[in-house]
Image (cartoon, rainbow, N blue to C red; front, side, top):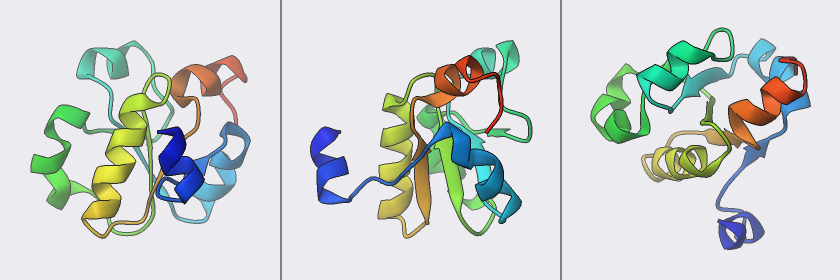
Length: 106
């Protein structure tokens, strides 16, 4: 993951940038399990678990996608997969846990 960041293959969004990116038209995708999503999620996020993401690509909205998981690893994998399919995708750095620790704002 660190090498991908150094090489610029993975784009990240910081928790404090999230609100402005969403206001600019980005879409938020929660790649955690349905149970994790139900236990708490960022408002407006669509739950498409990483395990089925490849099968549900056609369900994703057009435009920029910001993906997140609990802490970042699954989000990193999802962002890489989406970018390989030609989508504009970034990973929310630190995932849901960092967003929630910051007071659920951004």
